[in-house]
Image 1 (cartoon, helix red, strand yellow):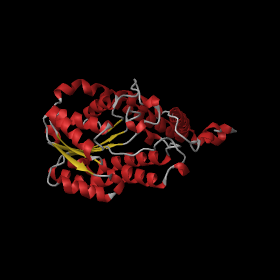
Image 2 (cartoon, rainbow, N blue to C red):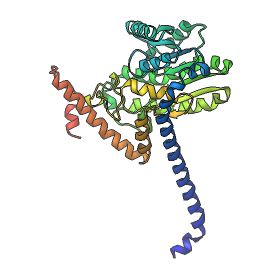
Image 3 (spheres, rainbow, N blue to C red):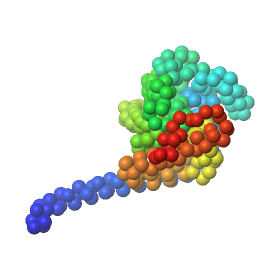
Image 4 (cartoon, rainbow, N blue to C red):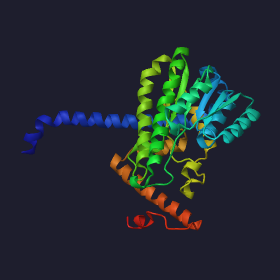
Length: 337
């Protein structure tokens, strides 16, 4: 009876199943090849010292450039003889970073004080400060994370708006501000830094992960629009990096095989520029991304939720160890989950 019902549909269904499986395997293989390429690329850095300068030009602009990945990325570009425009909201840190880079690598720097939580006002300020400088590499690194994993109702409204303005608004409007000039010159690179949190919905970092999913989608579409104009539009999606952004858990502030420091991460990430359009930016992150994609999204979300619950506990333990006065709201809620 079953053979009579399914008989006419056996071949079409088998064909569809085969195509789906083939596409999945091809996507997995492509991710694996990208991981291998990212792994091998740094071995050729001695032969690439001036290639980015020749390919794209003498000036790069990096947002969020006084700490973490942004600062390390600026240093890596300076090593290659590229002049750096440093953009951040802290003028003292900007001046210190500029001084470090100029004294070490003998390139020019320019600092711009801008707070991207102010939205388009900050982008206008950057554009005006840059003036006629030909920005050939734009690194949209600035981002805002939750202070620690929180339920949506616990996150202050201003913080939610800041996350959206900085993570979504800044990357969008900064691309728009400089992409036409790159197109006219027929060369240029845009690097949009996302996060591995884009791979699935992420409870307790709900809005943050959603903004990173936006960056992934936005960057892919932008590449389609401008790739034929000679522009490189790269998407970086790092996993955990030992930076202040992850200060809510001591486990993420210790460099390990899978959690590099910003300097190690940036050395690999810069080496992938112009070679791969999408990358985790670091070879062990590529391995993590490859295996993370295997389970369906709902399983990844479930795992991510439990990781965030553990990081949340870490945060409260750290708070308790500093003997802060008062009881932290939400602590009892964790214990009941």
